[in-house]
Image 1: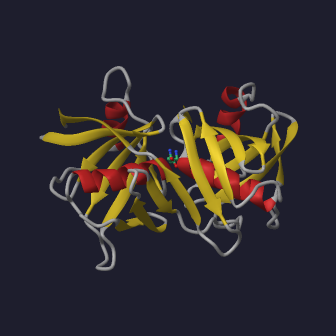
Image 2 (image 1 turned 90 degrees about the horizontal axis):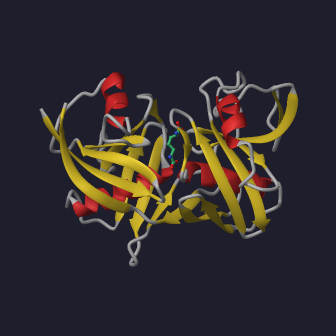
Image 3 (image 1 turned 135 degrees about the vertical axis):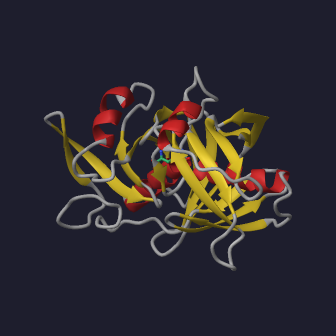
Length: 276
Ligand SMILES: N[C@@H](CCC[C@H](N)C(=O)O)C(=O)O
């Protein structure tokens, strides 16, 4: 069949977005890998499926697949593109859109300037739920990597993240340590590995080695997890500008018991169709 899709990105973290409200198709992990291939396919970091809601109090259901074909729980940059997509396609006229994901509900608001604000929900810090193997919850943990002890924070934004503080994000060993941390035995479902440089209490720089993809130009949930990790250590203010290789996000977290709010752009690149 011919499958209609929209190519989009959030700060260079790119997506194939498919309307499954008016189309119906089942894609195998192998088909997703083929579509994600940047030379032989369309090329993307994640595939986003826009589905009808399963519950009457929700507007849509949102499913996310990494480029390696694995289904995942959450994607922050994708959530902003999702909001832009359902409005552009006139699947809704609402300004506040309620969406079910594999790990909880999120709320998306389209701002007057076109940016999207996402209520990402509360961060998950209980190691059992992240999941992260340890005997007790802590703000940071020592993780043995290649015979060295690294100090990391473990945070879930629906999906698991390890956050490592570095002096200089440009020279951080993302290619070397990212693949090792992301498959570390203490993260049984693997994780996204973030390398955070604190510029000042209101600004951080971040690079993320994403589970199921590799290093991306931006990771929305990674930005949220990094701000939570920095706030728990008392190093960051309530609202922080997070600069990633692809651009900047504004992240606000009041503290435990509050949701993380993310604001940033969502860009449509082109409309396409492909035979699957
Ligand atoms: N790019 C995303 C995160 C996508 C999922 C991630 N790779 C995972 O496996 O958890 C974002 O913007 O949050």
